[in-house]
Image (cartoon, rainbow, N blue to C red; front, side, top):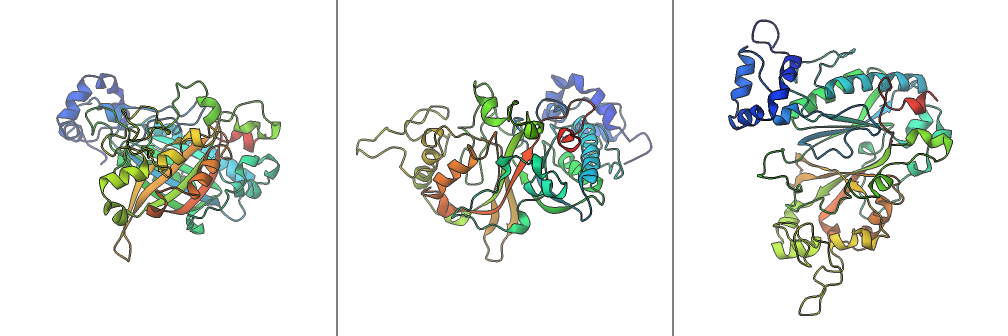
Length: 416
């Protein structure tokens, strides 16, 4: 992979990315032709559209929150090592931010871990890296006076079967990319860069549909086959920022969260064998939407507003009273909203022969006590979907705003 005329650096490939608009589509249609030429040393080749897409590391908000769903994802929680405190945490966040900024730009990862070459030849591929702090992080770093109330522990829910070893954590990292090797490359670089300051508490790996796999952009489907994410808040909505991101002007002790968001992470196992025994009609009644196109059972297309009061000829509500889409709708939760940005997962077959598969639920909001918690409480009391899912891990993390040029993520907290 190194030396000789066969080696083409990622920087050279990225330098040709300007031609990806038209030429990239041709290369994509040609299957592996572009990749073959790159390994033969025949000169720089324009990246395809997927490979050339770059997310910005620096900005008002961290990447990976409003960015479109990515094909591959890794969620990792770390605990600070015994003896590590605020100074070690600051140094770690500085290293992590530098590595993330380089990788998101399609450049090699420089640092104590150096670059493994795993993503050699690939462009940035929409790579995003997002960092957050758990409740215990503030105890470990002596910053409890700067811990916001929104990080209070989540309440217990009757559907919880939580494994504490796969829940919570001092630090949280989300990695997403449209190429599996690019995502893994970032994962390894950040794990190695942690050094002796922090150790992995848990890791979860997920996936979504690859961009370009459908003939037009479409809302993703989950492993139950349902269109998932139709009712998400849209950035074009006037109150989007207010619902999803922490606004400035709050208590000075929490000003470091301005432009940030709170993320709830849940590993939700889907009992697919039981679900797949149901008829499509029964599945649709449980969800409240048609399986084929995601349209509400009250009629229309996927984007048609759900008519919760509409009844059929028999007088029964078209969207059943305990349908998942009805119970979770903002109309039934005082306007509570969250931006869901999940990954599906499949971790093999359990000892009982069932698939260990489901959803890595990731949702974003300005305040979990006005977003996730009221909705989950309502679902906990009567969601028709509950018998077919099991919440097995959980975490809540404060995700600070993005870093300005020359800053690292969390600097306003750690160096105040």
